[in-house]
Image (cartoon, rainbow, N blue to C red; front, side, top):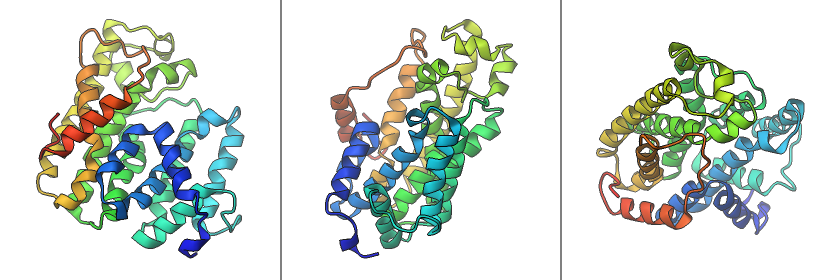
Amino acid sequence: MTDAAADKDSPAYCAELVRAHDFTRYASTLFVPVSQRRALLALYAFNVEISRVRTLVSQALSGEIRLQWWTDMLAGAGHGGVEGSPVAAELLLAIRNAHLPVERLSRLVDEHQFDLYNDPMPTMAALEGYIDDTSSVLFSLGAQIAGWQSPDIEHLARHAGLAQGMAQVIAALPLDASRRQLFVPLQLLQQQGIGTEEMFAGRQTPKLRTALDQLIGEAREHLKTAFALLQSVPPEVRPVFLPLAMVRRDLEQMSRADSDPFTPRTPSRFRTLWTLWRASRTRLFRT
């Protein structure tokens, strides 16, 4: 596939998709070199497409079909061409230009099959495995787009993704509870004697607060490790990890005693831009 094969409007389409559905990652691309931005937005747009399948379908089977299309596309089987899908066109271009590993992108698709059903996340280990192949892989592949791969960066990407992914689980509680979906590990709830119906009721209780505080604590430990590792990575790769500044801010808000996890929040885009801009000017993304 040549650069000319991608529709001239495909990059703009991907940018708008990410801006609309994942503003933090969109805003973070404003701080990377222009030469990296197109591939990053293709990666993030692909993630948006996969992550929102659950919200676009009324039946799990329809979602499975949508995800299978992406699996086939990545494998170069079944559907073949990417006509009509600017995200697929841009992603294939990014895969070629940045040598992104297709198998890791395919695993991201596979993990999101979990989203289509209402089986609860059973354990912390299961949640970590899910996040490794969804949030963490985006940091890892973003670093590769920036031109860097190493065991140290992979270690950083894993902890960065775990911190972000756990924070997102808590942020998504209002939506997940409304559709009777449970990403907070059942293991944590059972330790506090909490049943799934108590979660789906959408009311905070002292026991539920304790369980969520444990998950927040796990996320903060991963974030602490990520920031420690961030100090030793090349400056060129650091902007890929800028979303960690928002994770830090979100976890601080979630930890407040008066924070109700079942109250939906709509983050200010101006505040997000301001936070990322300030973070980009400091070594450890202080805001």
